[in-house]
Image (cartoon, rainbow, N blue to C red):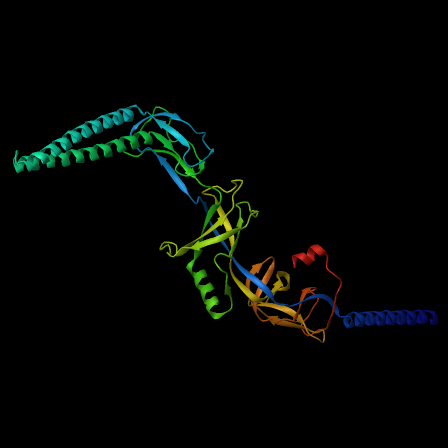
Length: 385
């Protein structure tokens, strides 16, 4: 009986010892503050960008057309090649235009002969009228004939120039430099008969334009921010543009904003913004759908925080956890703007010098003390911030 009693007392003592150890361990855990990593808020100049959609457009585009009627004899260019202004593209049968030119030259020589004869007759009549050998009416008729034949010479010269132009139009040349597409007619086709037949299309591709659309609501918000002083407008010649291709990759060459249209599309309520990009390798082709990140404003003293540092409560209000000088955690509501490089732009709620929790948020509790982990971040993670 005494042995059982001693054994029972031993078990009780062991249980009390284990309970004391657990209590001591829990007390130590509660006494040990959570470890967090913080970031000190600082201000810096920030650019406000808008990502707009649009399409690529050629800055200059010329539709080559037949200016005279005739049969196409030859296409002298290679489809899809680069051409220069003045290069011969098509040859239209010049025979009828050469005949018209010869006829105009003959008509001019005839008119010049008639004018020569009328001029001599006017000179003879001028001498006879002094001697009163002819009537004044005859002299007036001679003078009128001389002037009429001179007008016939001028008309014949104009017809000759027109014949020369038509003969020149039989050789179709490039009106601008650029890349020419497929031929719209073939040899033997009758063109220009009662209409100006299109023959080919030439487009300039370097540099190239990107026509973007932006809603008037966004523009009005920017204007109000400019007037209130929250944002500063970027000069039109200083606005940078970054093109995002259809596969999500960034175009390697930067662009610039050229101008904003002054007319709003009544159907969509949007306005056109035109940007320009270098296109030396002709990677950008007209008609392609693209997106452009356009810098439209700047904030001189902007504040940003990592996206992972922002939490939202049940009401959807954004907030961050801050650490004060006594190492206590507090909740701080913030007003957020756009996202840039995985960071929120903070428009209100924080000031320079505030320390916000960026890691260990699940362990930090408002009102409790924490300790700060000051070990350097890896380079890749640090660059991401």
